[in-house]
Image (tube, rainbow, N blue to C red):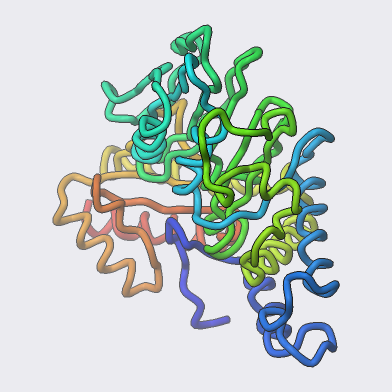
Length: 362
């Protein structure tokens, strides 16, 4: 589409154009049923076929082994900040967290409402511009779990490798980088991800949880906030976000057609490499925020000499059709979110714009 924007929004974020077109075709009437999927009962066979197909595709693409449940929940990752300690914390055992930035901080804040929290590692002294190494982790012997945020969208940092936590269940918020690369799910006790960055639209949250961690919580927890409630009913205990699940199903089909997570990682590394090359080769005109070893494949963050120049960059980029390049309001600067659905051509166009802007203002 000639008038389609270069979408670098941090979330809700770009969706594959092919997926949007298919959804448009099926929106009014779904597969000859005479109605939209959004008008149907979630207990009917038509919706259930979409629901279970999405689960099957996610299991295939993420390599989810037996012994794990896949849940489609609501409330975003922010609700999981509370549900995780509600369900997994226990008296006399600490909830351990790695503090790597804003989203990890929000998870820690919620956990403190339900459990004693231990900070296993923190990069606050480095302005959250790096990921801690494995030997920096100090996990309490009595930890109920260790929680980390796999990708911090605001700072632009990402775990390159996940730590071995032994018998302590590893819990990860993967909202902004799930399926951007192959994943060894068996390393984790629980993974959760809001869909609106890499899986689909806002409205559904994916939870992948090891079955032995699903049980009666050690403290009173409302029925709707228990993992067991949704695991027993295949996420159909109450009305699920049917449209969002349908869209996730289409995105998963698109990802499979593209070659799966291994193929997507190659594309994502090429996209990120183009932008980091422009930053590092600019002679200091652009300055990367995250430390080199912790740079994200999904959120490229950078600064310029002063805020006025950054404002000019945003203004001119918007006029040229680029959307979402202004940094998060808490830190400022510039940020290009290049999730799975952001085409390579969009990143190439941004790299070209960055070179041109530097030539005119450097």
